[in-house]
Structures are given as structure tokens and as C-alpha cells.
Length: 152
Image (tube, rainbow, N blue to C red):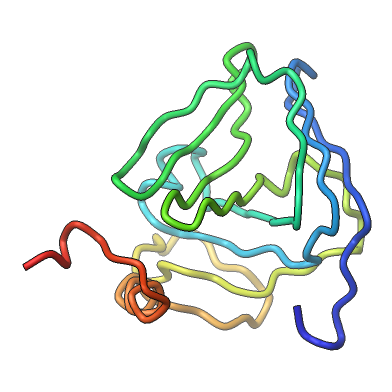
């Protein structure tokens, strides 16, 4: 977080049926949006995620996890089907579906990724930094992560 952002101390969210609860602590007040084809296929729309310093998931026995690629997992409630989180496996980073929480005006959209995969039938009014798939992969590679398609 930059100097002008203050973490939200806590946030409680849940799936549609309430079988899974997620409690976040020190939430970044930022929503990042992914327009990739996998996120859109997973949820029928772009993925809007929030992250936090720590979290607790209750109703874990109702969580199903799908390994969607060699570096990612996506979770959903096995009772109602609500999407719960995206996990970037190499960094063990969780991004939780922003719609599970009632943030009111406390968060804002700060970044859009995989914009080169965004279909033309929607646009957001917010003016945010936008990255293509190639830029996202390059940024992750610069941070030390490797991907199977990068192997020699």
C-alpha cells in the first residue's frame, strides 16, 4: 500500500448460502480486475478481487478448489456455487471475490489486467492502470516467478 492508503482493519464476507464465511484482516482498500478468458468463464464476468494480510475461512468443508492452471487455484462453495477466491500458487497469494464483502465506499478499483482479452461488450468508467497478458507475465517473471511456457 502507498502512503495515502489505510488498510481496512477487518471485513467479514460469506457465500450466497452462508455455508462458507471469510474473515479478512488488514484489507487492502483496492479492487483489482482481471479480464482474462479463464476468469470470465469461471464467473461469467471479469474477476474483481481484494487481498488482505491475513484471513480465516469458516465452513472449509464446503469449499471446493479447482486447479485451473499450473500456477492458479480457484475456489467456490460446493453448496451454492459462489466463487470465493483465486490463489496464485507460487506466491501463496489469495485474492478474494470483492462481492462477498460489503465495503461500501471503502475500496476502489485500482488496476485492470489481461485487458487484451477483454471483450468489447463492456467497459468500466474508472481510469485505472491497465496491463496486457504479456505485461502481467513479464511483471511476474521480473519478480522471480516462472511459468511452464517460459521453460526452455
